[in-house]
Image (tube, rainbow, N blue to C red):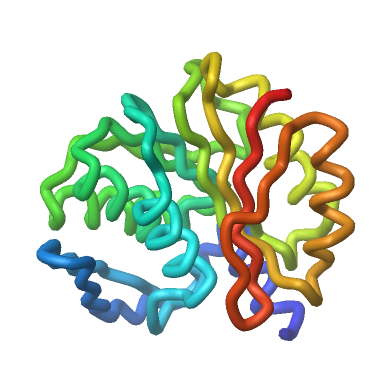
Length: 202
């Protein structure tokens, strides 16, 4: 990936031209339509890791969830799908203003109970949640990824859970080991090098 891509992905570039595209996704009987654009993660299709994260969570969750936070939401795929399928109020945040603008459009398009705002990690987050879920921006660097994962515990309700996806070659095993200092960690699924991980406050 070149430097321009990285800058557009993690900063708020005003020079990047829009090129809207429509992405459709179905989960069981639920149908979704997303608007995407240049300058956001996986702009042309539903990211495989995010898809596996969402579907693994929905297939394995047996708890009543009353609030969700999607960190690094991009154009909103994870939070929008969970909000609609679970019928749970959801908050979606991203450091990228363009991503948040797209998420606003996708919240309205898919008619869900959700809000979105710009936040550098948890900087502007004031509440606690039953579920924090993220496909962390690996290319932003380990410090940002670990800020998202480690600081999640400060924004989880009692018995809350953090779910995330990380690839083997992106340091899944070392990340799990480091997170075990703060959480009870379980690998829920492995597929094509992707690890779906659940972390509970120990």
